[in-house]
Length: 345
Image (cartoon, rainbow, N blue to C red):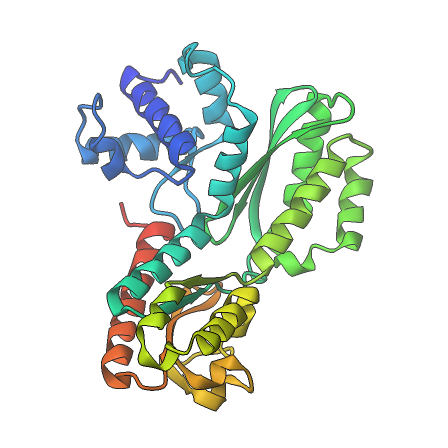
């Protein structure tokens, strides 16, 4: 089916915005763009049709859409101008990949910075364990016979990709077979179950291919990145405003302890129910035994639970800070839902 000029404009705008931000694109963002003189409702309808036609995909937990393999191919063949086709530098490519890989992490880190600014305390933001995440879809996009983009979409709405160069040329039918086997074998199971033995099944079914090595390396990086909790410490220097830390030696010991290994700041009690407070020695026999921590949980759907909290002296307004942190965590839940989960559009 021939694409109308309006669909072409919208598809090109989505791809341009997705390349710029590495985040799924929604109709409201498109309607606000200069040069697209269509209403949000019109854009929403056109996006739905482009999705039905296979040019766009909607990540499971995202409010927006991302280009599909077919959408990228149409863009390259029919929409891309010479300026669009200029290659990015290595540093730009690294930055874009890093930005995409840290999509959720960046949101949680920014949340830590914000609660630190709001409370004037040091803040801790901990991402959830993502070991229950599964891969929803693999894509192997050919740039040329020796260059491919590996794209993975998870059921948590995270889209990750990597540009790889193979040691030998890979035929189109080889890549298609490998993509089919990956989608049949490694999707809809927790990442923790993607073992060497299971990948051997892929190897035997797909045959020898120069793409197998880069795919295996990318999967290992993905499992490590999503499986590890990340801990962000923001505003640690704010502790110095409290009289309890006017002793330079004491303050330095505490700040060094927190900075050297941020895992010290993960709650001793893994599962936080609502808001919980850990006072003094409850934080262990270490420099944190002279501090108090208030934590609140936030959720990533059925994927897992993270926590966000503040650190300060044991002399703090527990009632007021707990209430503020509770409100903040509820707002964070809403923000995550709006950012990563489907909207009824």
